[in-house]
View 1 (cartoon, rainbow, N blue to C red):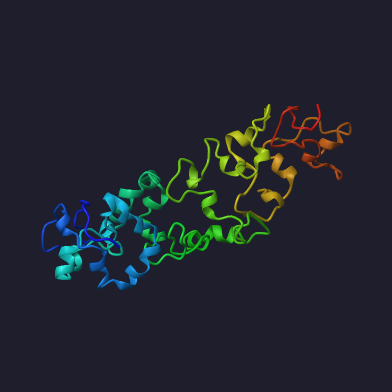
View 2 (cartoon, rainbow, N blue to C red):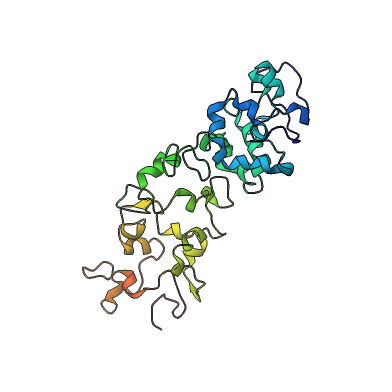
Length: 293
């Protein structure tokens, strides 16, 4: 750990506390260095060497500070012991915490302020912990998906369905499909304008482009037919049979007759739509999504 640096960090007080001195712009003399912080906060300092934030000591020609880069210049706090003279994220308002973290991380998380998490007053420290992280990567308080399930209990139950994406099994995590820090798509999806890019990065055979596109895949996206987290139906379909799914849009054909038994949904021997319309996600050879002309 390196000592005092030349960063200009304002001295911040916890919400509701009244600092004994007005906030001022910190100078190099106001920084005491990590060694001074460690005299009282040895538990936090002892683990910090393996923390990605320890690289802040390499700033400004290896004269950067670590503890005080986030908590503010510490001389006044160290000399007086007054907790109001140091920034404590555990006692700060969510917006104050976010502003502190985004002063460095704004380049990667520039959409956080308009994300659902920020709008619901969740701060960076709701999910992340600098000093007591469980996961070295991203410094999460709890590993995914358990972290997300703490709030999204309705989604947790969906992964218990007979057919589901393998999140509980560890094959996927929530952040493979969602950006918790904000995204342009609905539900923080990592998606394109048609909201299916997040799906086709794994299901590449469905990506297209196709000469003959199935309109719902471009207008509503994959969720027009599939339930992404989990479903009681095979292939995560949102209806128990393929025919019921197709007939949501394709009302009964006027050709239902003995001459076209395949379209006779009222008969006992009707066929599943995808027996003939096999390329249902899109086709390059047949506008009716068959495998032949």
